[in-house]
Image (cartoon, rainbow over all chains, first blue to last red; front, side):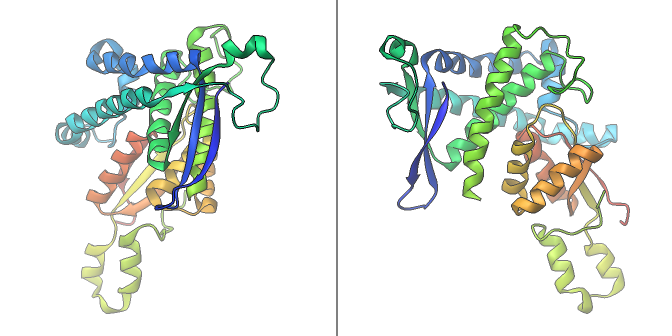
Length: 192
Length: 110
């Protein structure tokens, strides 16, 4: 499963370095997400609630908000698209990892029969790359939660009135990404 | 809400406090931050992620970032910066880029 391995500190910057390990199936899912978001952003009228969540209002006053969007809207969209391009490149950086146990600090990862399932990919992350991953994973979570109707104050992950069955693939992905984000943010905060 | 509380991360507020005795009242009013950046509660963003964003964007200590996050969580909103309009727009834009719900509004004392 997903884990983040400490690789010490960069000799020049002093920032911490990490190695993110992903199962092949996890990597395959993550690899497809930037393009899915790209398609979504390319068709805002068909995905209005999600797009509105990614680009919330800045002003309560409609006139001020309209002017703000006129001045900044295109730049904000391009920034989001650029983030997806960077994540495409991140996915290409991932290299095959022999097993999930190569650091020795994860003692029990299953026997040899499970090794094929445990094999995956890994990539090193510095602070800037951690930040990139965090923003991307959080964006996907916002999209999924909005799509699942979990974006209002009384319908979040803690709500008892969640209408989505637990086996819903989108919900499963949302939960997986929540776990991944928790791992990433815990690491990122160590540089503060 | 603690909208009147200045933060060290806000250079405008810091400048105001260091020049307070030298500035005439009218000019002082013009220099005062007149916009508040408000972060709103959101059921999706992880609390630890919100703390991370506050630390990264505003340079808050972990304690202050946690306090502001809890203010958002418990009160539904928190004023995280008080500054001029241009910087408030910058902060709101960055908060949006990180997926937080943020707006800006004229400070009540402006």
